[in-house]
Length: 173
Ligand code: IMP
Ligand code: MG
Image (cartoon, rainbow, N blue to C red; front, side):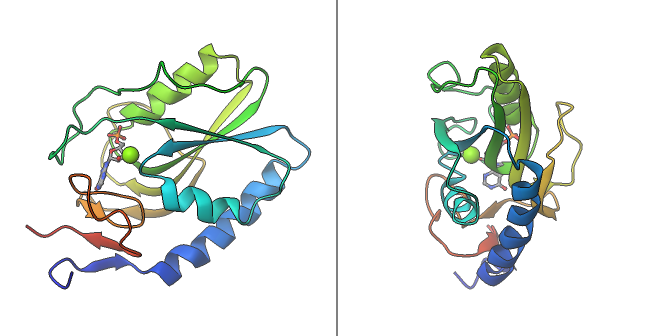
């Protein structure tokens, strides 16, 4: 992997997750919380974050896709929203995703959760890109803000590969 420089090391990631989990724990104290992980990208982030959260919460996962195979640009459509299951009525939902880019995925999921009766929906992402969003959406918690580069590792893929690379690297082609 030496051609693809490390942007964020795995130590930095774990340290930041511990900080963030403290804020999340105190925010949701005494609330009925559902964590909704968006797969596949949040796979590692979700698990590592959950290790620092209390036992009394529900976990749901939806499998979504906005990038067609082999692309580094969002297709503009989010697939898999209707299949999403779980009971969200009157629940506080925390969506956990890998990255906030155009905002299309997270705004679509947020809207779907509101339709399903969630009383409060917040967002927690590993990364957020600095660029202007196509949808007006913000993440209450984010581990790191990055530039407009394409990154992979720690759950994020390039063309379906490299998700299990332990750190976040910038793709150089
Ligand atoms: P959005 O709907 O444009 O905000 O995109 C969200 C999804 O795009 C993320 O969940 C990722 O799967 C994917 N994505 C956006 N930027 C990157 C990147 O730099 N590397 C890998 N995947 C990315
Ligand atoms: Mg994703």
